[in-house]
Length: 504
Image 1 (tube, helix red, strand yellow):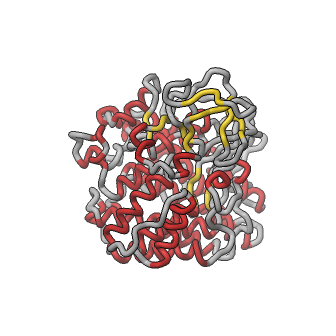
Image 2 (image 1 turned 90 degrees about the horizontal axis):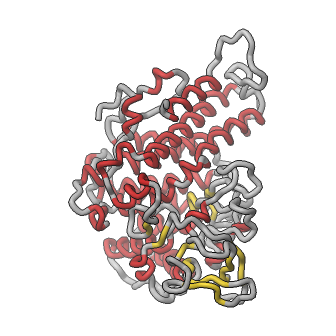
Image 3 (image 1 turned 30 degrees about the vertical axis):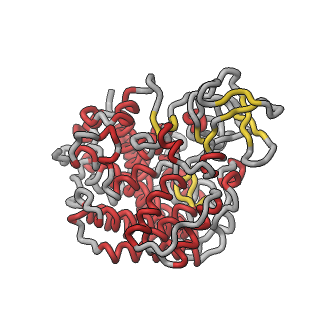
């Protein structure tokens, strides 16, 4: 069977190139008859966003971002590719289907964004719409390359539309500077195009200027800490660590001070309420809804976190309230590591309210509990939809969240008064006391690293903090692996076979 990426590229070539056809099929769009109106261009942009909702990509957010860390494990009969990721069986990584799909769909998203970037300027519609669509497309290209470089290191660069099979044969970037310079440039371009675009309320599955600033803050922090910690390839980057930290703090501060739409939620339950998808913490959230027809349009992410429980429908307590909401049972694919669960402070609401160890009947009576009474493991309830329709839910990955950027600012800026205020707000919301005062910069950043572990748990983020702090060797399953084996995943062999310019 031909590689799926090659098939998708062929499809993209068919859609986006001007083919010489005697008869064009009904509904066929080429560059000569598409992008003429704002609606056309917006459809193409939504198509670019849509690459992220493929189940092979959306589930990989957790398989790559949480599964290989101390946060999660998986069931013994899970798919072999995901067991290999969980167990760090690096000998099988180059043919790992989960890695291959993540790599492929990232490039599908890049190619679709490139098509928007190429064609929108010539559209016959108002410039304000062009600026909006171009800003979002540059953001998407940057986001996908940031996802790729953090996982695979040096990757091929496609800054124009791939319209022929020959154009898929791009070589690997010469160094990380080449990849990150494109990401930074795209973020800056996105900010410029979207300078007047900040949504009055967050939009599900779309981005504005704040999202571009937030992404750029994350990018600069990643470079700064990875270079400071001498992560493989990052140590050789032509970037100044202090300058990268300064720019990370600057753009995070832009997010926090130059707009009024986004901010902290007052309590954790509201933050993760599926009906609060337009809540002020949601800077970028994936667009899925239970009303969709096919998976990807709707989500089954909740099924991945929840264990199987007899009776199918159970109820969860709503924080400190005497209120219970229903949920379905699950497939127990994303299982909380017990040592991680036990590492939370006992009073931390991110444990007591957001990780479930008891389930109830509709009347509030106890139905089952962990560890000995029917709940196999404590499970994350960040992805719960009480209005589920069979397996269809509106649970969505949180791709960029306000609290994440507040912690980015604190880590980048160091122990300033504002940094302490931000971290203490997050800790106090979780029911914890203030962070120890008067820490030096190194110790303060260490505390932020620790705080992120609990605040960002089960959101596909932990692995990247571990990578940029050069602490993969602290994961027990990586014992005996070299830096070359553990710092980056290998380019999938299927892609190497298709790309004659990759010499690995």
